[in-house]
Image (cartoon, rainbow, N blue to C red; front, side, top):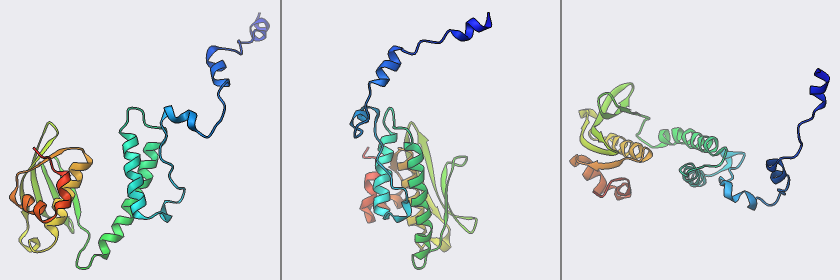
Length: 191
């Protein structure tokens, strides 16, 4: 009886197999309906920062679609890691600056700036329904005259932008910062 089971072969044709076998390899135009991520170069270290940023933007837009192409997330991570790797030495090259840590302390509802493991500045916030209200900016007295306020506010705005939050700058120091640096205004909510 077991010999009879093995002698019965499954059918080799099905509607699915027939439709797949009729596909022919072309220049890739047939795959346009499946989404096509931007092609990333094999060696990201040879690309300029400008090209990497443009590529990261295109990949992010692909990720934001309903059905992103396979591998887009990994490509985005690769490009982001390369940008982060290049950003660390760039911070150290700026005269008179030193690398500072930045984080979102969700327990205390504030963004914090660190220098040598010590909090040197913070921005208190309220987060409700996708709206990030920046209430108050505090800097340690030794850091008032340095670019610490710039690093703290810039980090806060970029973090909110990455998380797609509508920023409401209630704090006067942040409003002054936006007047002095108008290229950050598109990151702030108009309402």
